[in-house]
Length: 296
Image 1 (cartoon, rainbow, N blue to C red):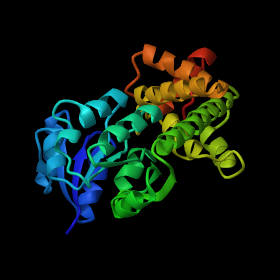
Image 2: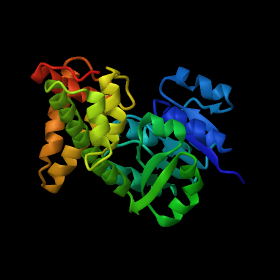
Image 3: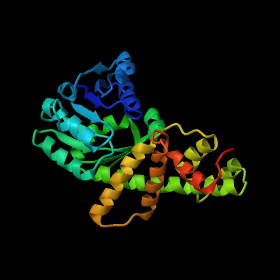
Image 4: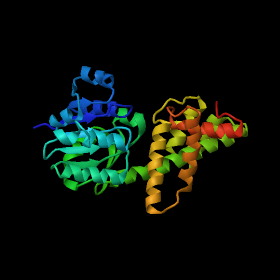
């Protein structure tokens, strides 16, 4: 029998991910907090369900991708939640970026009902979600991962089982450390070049192909030069992730100074009312300090 997919959360990432599952031939029952966000997918053949419980009752694999830890707890364990509708033997795949320790607690609650869980946060932004090329980092049991691999393959390309439940979330936090500090490095390079009067497009072409090369230099820096701050990933969501990173660092008793600086600079972006802009808006904090704009 074909695997029936439930999909909860149709934001910048969730909608294209669900669409790719449908393109791969999966039948999808969907739910999201703002019902109008489901209209396009319903028109394309998805089935709307009024609650996460209703989604779960019609699905073998339930995928969630919502904003923050409390949102996942509400969707999975709250009134009308997945746990009330899921059958023994079904699988929950949470693809949000949330607390690793809370993930382990939710998995235990689901397991008591005979429901397996994988934590599978993603990297690659909206472009990767649309193209179906996301990196997916998974925590959970090997046999459950193997069963769900075709589901992952419809949404991503670089798919790795890291370890037991929670390992996917912790890996995503490591990813966000690398991403945010690379973003800061890219922004500082642009500011130095701008202040020195360089042609920023030529400067980028010169450094992007060498040891300085990064996803941020290749993808975000050209958007900054064009003054394009539309979100592939919003500042406010990056900040949510960095709070999780710093919380995990505190639990483990380690210092992460680079991330701390990026987080503080992003605070100033949010304070300026720019939290809905893309993470490339980090450069604005440096622009304001330096009195120069990184533009073509």
